[in-house]
Image (cartoon, rainbow, N blue to C red; front, top):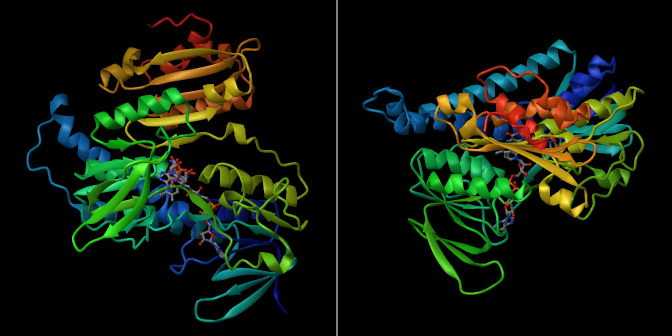
Length: 469
Ligand code: FAD
Ligand code: NAI
């Protein structure tokens, strides 16, 4: 007799593990299957994504500050030295602490975990193929697919995770490269490029399009590139990589203008391929139940339901922003629907953050989107150079920009470049969830001296009454 569950979840990342916890809270008997050979829960995010990258961003930011900024604050240092092994070890500690934390939450919520590859055999059966060849079949009233995503490869550039690396290799390089070439000026390229630049690498970023962070507001993208350049990153925009030749001691990267033209060779000792991620559904048995991913490989859903009514899909393997907190939201809503409740999610209210120095955060529409949708809007902007806390801390780069509807004043988009942007954005996401007007933010008291006052001043700017500039 197969094990019986109300919900069998395939994948133990932020989508899968949050689904298991929420299902259990709702009184559903839940199992979660995870294929990672290390038998750790947490998915890409905890093992090779959000957490290790943020651990290295934090440590490398402090290292660079100690090297370049401490003296200006009256803090003298001598003999500053990078201990990369230790930096990588503290990153692994952070990862292990958090993955073990998920295992604890599973125990607390009486969730059964299985380690091995999950394969859907029929709408009510999922096999777990263990590494040692063993196989267990679970009986499932409902199935949630949360198998996430994988690195998009670049044809002709073979990732070996030593010299030609993906984000996974970039989280564990045993030494600082002399010259790191980053292919793709997206989130991974700029975050992990920043880590290795701060630790001493020369970093050159090659981007196919004519701007960095393409989905961001154009003004933010331009300002951000200027800041990264000032920090020492070099950019080749509107440029494509046509191949990487591996020589004994160096790599030869061939590039061409994106629109065609004369080729150029760049030499480096390490190349990071970060041109995006794609949904991962290999070996999942979708054919067994007639689910066909779309042309881009995503599983299509309506309210998280696939074409098979009791099989749901969430997170990176379905359309929408490929972000951990989006996967978590999907998980909660999908489980509430399974439990007979009304689940709701608005992808327009999912914030997006780039954890560089300073950070970039956004939610809602960009100016370009509003123009394209012919929505009339007003803009309120406030620079951190005029914010007392930012000035006090000598962290004045960046600004807050609020876009509000021209007639209703509803906040439609917020864009922040600046130290602490990742935390500042939460206030405006909440405001937007309540369909707040910019005036609601402008008339909300903010503590002084805080960077959050810049958000208020930008909101005041929408109606032209910014007071501190
Ligand atoms: P995943 O986390 O990918 O989890 C899916 C899991 O399913 C995997 O563990 C996989 O082993 C397992 N699996 C796959 N197939 C099977 C199968 N057949 N059987 C059993 N198990 C299976 N997002 C943010 O919001 N903030 C960040 O700061 C951030 N930083 C990132 C940094 C990097 C370097 C990377 C690569 C990603 C980052 N992301 C970040 C994105 C984030 O990691 C993903 O959006 C998130 O992990 C998606 O969650 P998920 O549960 O859908 O998929
Ligand atoms: P990305 O989609 O953010 O950026 C990829 C970049 O590569 C784009 O600018 C694109 O134009 C460019 N590109 C594509 N093909 C190219 C080519 N052939 N040559 C040169 N440039 C090319 O993808 P990235 O950075 O790999 O990250 C994947 C996803 O992981 C992100 O989209 C995001 O969802 C998630 N992530 C989120 C983070 C966060 O929330 N802070 C951090 C890291 C990753």
